[in-house]
Length: 437
Image (cartoon, rainbow, N blue to C red; front, side, top):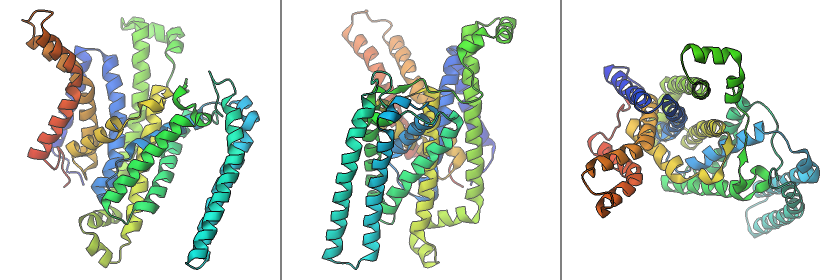
């Protein structure tokens, strides 16, 4: 639970001062860009905090659940490609249905038949036959779809629905993947869960990169529609009321339109974050939240009291992963494109864990604070490091080898800073800036 006191307000005030100072020192466009990604990062950190802070579940597959959210943004909001659907869409659906049916049949055989060699042989026969049928239907359909204008489409497209619907769908996609991982790995030791989540994340990323029929693979999907009520800059620059407003404040219409768009995104993201914080705080203070913390602190005692530890772990694992999926859909919405090559563990796993640890695991507001602070550092440390190196070497000649080396190394300052910051926090304040009460 969160204790509201002067220290917490001061910490949030200092982080706010960093963003405001960036606006004055650089530009408000830069500040709002960092703020919007900070809001999304705070939501990711909130999801991981639910898993680790509430239940002690070690999830290192955040990347995969975030990527599923990005995929949902494409599948929900992009318009369908009629030529691709005509070429192989129904056959793709039939192939997926055949694959699902073979898996369902194997599960039923496992449940109904008595244990023994015969059950194993029958299960393998069903799975092999199902796989061969799946590939016989799927491969020709995939090739036909990817051959349809591959430079611009080459995939089925989406449903053409409003982008805002993609955010909860992204949460559902991530929750489904979390259910599969949880049913497999929860109940085992925590290192098995870490391996399982890492594996599923790499599998999801490999699918996104290689299955062009799904979301164009590494050719990327661009031009995603914006959610209501976020406008387009061009529309604002052509609107008389906006030009009049910009002229009244003496602002450049191009810059002002960019700022208004970023503010619109920020308001949407802030609403989602506040709703999620409210829901997570209510859950944490409820009997369910107290039970989750009791299970985290002592599983043996909780199980002796009649609590189904594995079931509760599965619940919180699904919920936390769904929050990460929502954040992934929001991030793809903000970018306006899905680029699978940009998903890397450093950004979408390590950095989120740093946010949770620095902010204070087990504390929702601490995770939010860590999300804003660490993201600001991640973006601003590199230009600050470059300025610092240039200042230190100002008295050296332009062609001095040491000067050039220090300036060229400034790009690595963010990695050094994150590692150093994390080590200092673990050494002097291991419970985080706003620790669990």
